[in-house]
Length: 485
Image (cartoon, rainbow, N blue to C red; front, side, top):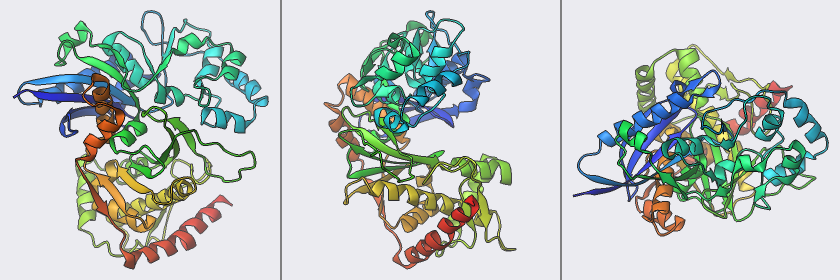
């Protein structure tokens, strides 16, 4: 019997993945490679990135047994990044002093206005400034990483909403490129294109891609979206009654609204949110992020010096460890600086409470707990804007560890709902392809289809919540204050 399939491609900060799903959202196969293999000294390499995508697609499709029909492909990616393309479709890298242009712009633009219009804080590296200063080869089109991969697969260029918004050049309220920024820089808006919804048809896979891959002739490619927002789509998060928690390289907390959140002029809350367009049309996110599992990767590579197998063995030992009380050790998760509740890139991480009994497993557990304390700071910011009866849904690598899940629910003191889905970002992209191809009647229909897969609900242990709460208030928060002095 022929299988009806969808494919999602995820261009992430850690890995590039291609995943194949049936139309009910069940993962059939996946292939990935490290993101570093797709990059050169200037960022993503056009040759290496395309080759990685094709190789992953080939491997994932090769694992599918029997006949199949691939309805479509969509691509998700990390936000903010851009791929600059000339008239021949080749990558161009900007040259020139954009700092002075940015400085002049921000001297006459209030930072509150920047945030309330774009959803992002002032940033000298914003692409409009870099284009204004560029003195090299002519740049014809600005694409996100996802839009660029779709372009290389089809030869057609499209700009998708959620990734367009993430560049800090989009006016959320008027639904267009920010006039003041483009008028000041003199950058041609045409280079940024017409922004379209996620799930919009880009084109058909090129014959030369078909010749190099197992992707069937005639396969359609659709716009995908910003990675955490495609994850939210897969997890069924599109309102203020759902908070998405992603425990990945970055820890993300996001809730969703019908209009972009605004910061009042007298707002003194130090939390730094980001406001993005959801992949669900007409929805906006209120998002906070911090360095998450990237700090466990730092621990693995820089401190323990173990390979993937050794890391897996350590986690296996952790799962067998008796986890009925908080760690003696305490980790302050600022190895790469601090993003919540305020930004301080000079902040330093630390371990405290070490004894002669401290070993690798106890350090790993303390690191996970420290990340969960940080997640609590983020959740407290979300509680100020979300509905009081919200549900917290968690996806990402942290869900694979029972110890991580248990620590998080105890420290957050809230039930955690874990959808029965795998690789949420790639699944969300595949679902967007399904919306575009007509597999699902609407975005809501797609989410309801995936929700039929069910979820697991994990609840806090009342006997340990109080102990974690005490550590959070009397040690974690206070030590951060001391380290800042």
